[in-house]
Amino acid sequence: MNKTAFNDKVILIDKQKGLTSFDTISRLKKKVGIKKIGHSGTLDRLASGLLVVATGKATKLTRYFLDSDKTYNAVVQLGIVTDTLDADGTVVSSAGVTAEHMAGVSAVLDSFVGKIEQVPPLYSALKIDGKRVSDRVRDGEALTLGSRSVNVYSIDLISTDPVRSTFEMRVQCSKGTYIRSLARDIGQKLGCGASILELRRTASGEFSVEQAVSVENVSADADERNYIVTIESALKFMNQVTVDKSAVTRIMNGAWFDEGSLLSVDNRGSDYCAVSDGKMVLAIAKINFNDWHVVYENVFN
Image 1 (cartoon, rainbow, N blue to C red):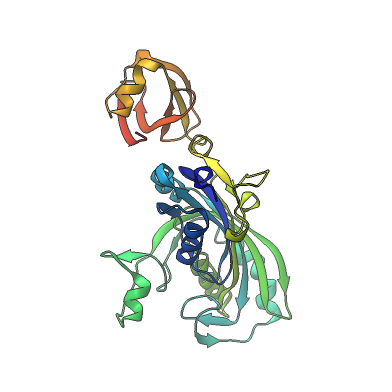
Image 2: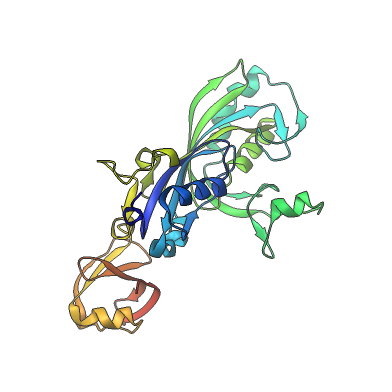
């Protein structure tokens, strides 16, 4: 396979359930023949859906995608609590689920919309002193995690299944929101406990799982490759700054360019500016246009 089609790009992958994010990246490396690959936002083994992958120079972008809002579809199992807060874990408690519990789901979901405090799962990729919390727990450490603020923009109840004691919800939320923790807290508020049965990430920032493909379907020869995104397209959510030729060399050397080098500015409400020569992105920067101060975050030299 011709790896040029994939190098210095963002690749949108639909991760399969049952694979870790690491497994998925390893398979992609073998498929496209590129070693420098990173991703923004780990998905649990149980989860499927959008994994935003970056290669070559585009790996510099992953931290910006991590900051993006996310959308998930989740099937929640009422009456069952596990140590991992999902169906992959060991059951630690169970309770009967009544008609009253099912009837109360909608109102309880509404109570979690907004800025909330959330305690992350003990089995997670969150790191303390450079080591994953999940690894520390498996090594026998007794940990108590503090809560942190996250934003849940909306929760839509898609369906309920009283026979299986489950419901499906769609959640739009800020970075750092754990849907497993959300399910746990919903179950606690209902009074019967809950855990995640199925989880799928459908969107991350400007990217949608509808654009993505499985690793098996990655092909440089495909007629339509919406899942391969250039650096320029991936940064369209940032403010767009275009400079003249006189600024290019200075930018590539990490030096300031002056205000007179500006050709155009398209303010899109971002904290960051994608600085280009009209053809390719040269750098990502924070620019104070009032006092003219430029701070480079990344330079693509």
